[in-house]
Image (cartoon, rainbow, N blue to C red; front, side, top):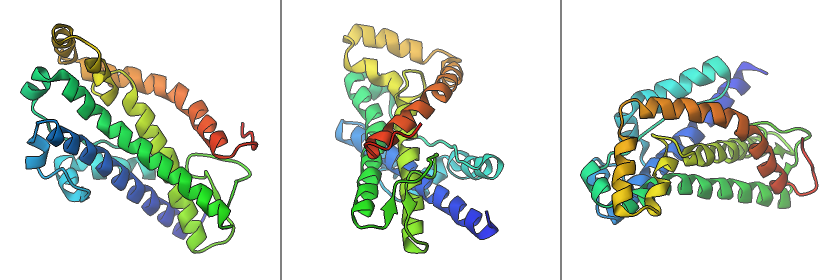
Length: 235
């Protein structure tokens, strides 16, 4: 692989990462605003402009993804949207909906990427690849613009599937840990809230989630690609 291609791939990775993460956090912020908490709105995070999100988490939005790409060839990072814990404690079901807005936005972006891949195939600029991986979900029939579009679509498909699934794991501080709030009574929600806020829960939750996700993501990624290409039977 040439240095130019590596530089382009790195840029494509970062553009998709930045956009997908910004949409995720902006969705949290917008949902909170609609449900009665304007904390993130006052922080300027109800926006698709990545700058407010980068200012809040410069390590997670810039340093970590770039470092992980240069060291491992893929990107990992994080971001966050502020919320009022008093509001979340008072309205646990609203807090649960706010938390799920982020993964829902990544699911929407995943579906858009899948649609673009299918449209590219219908237009004759994409074809199913001989083999698939994280950043090679579809192949271009020629270089130039088709190759650029295939690269962006492939990364958007895989990264948003990752963000959707990982954030739904039911471990703090991931968004999925708020899912029980939608079904618990107010009293039980208060007890669960206290459990989530216990010191050390976030570190423990991330450790367990990362261990589990490393095992479940590859087969789910392959399953999603086989849904994208019926009859191809990638394995």
